[in-house]
Image (cartoon, rainbow, N blue to C red):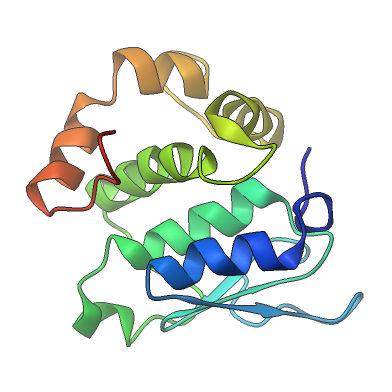
Length: 152
C-alpha cells in the first residue's frame, strides 16, 4: 500500500493546493487531528487535510475529496466526519480515483488496488468494477457540480 512517504509530501501538497486545500504533515507517531478512522488514516478539519508519512495515499485522497465535494460553507464546519450522505461518499470515492492520476507513480489502477486492500466495499466486489461499471451516478453528481477534473 502506497503511503505519503512513498510519494513525498510536496507532490501531495501541490495537488491539494490546486484544489484549495492545505496539507499538514503530522510528526511520526503523533496523533492525526481530525482522523475519523484513527492513525495512520488522514484527518480533516475545514479545508485542511492532516497526514503522517505512514498515512496511506488512498486515505489522504479520500479525505481530501470529502472536502472537495462539499460547498465552502459546509466545508468550513467539517471536523473529522465530513458527511453521512451516500451520494457524497460515492462522489469522494470516484474523485479520489481520478485525482490519483495526477500523482507521479500512483495512478488510478494502483489506487484502486490499495482501496481494495484496505477494505473499501463496493457492490461489484472491487473498486475497479465499481468505477468502470457502476459509478455513473457518482460521475454525474460530480459533473453536475463542476467537480470533474479536466476531461475525466
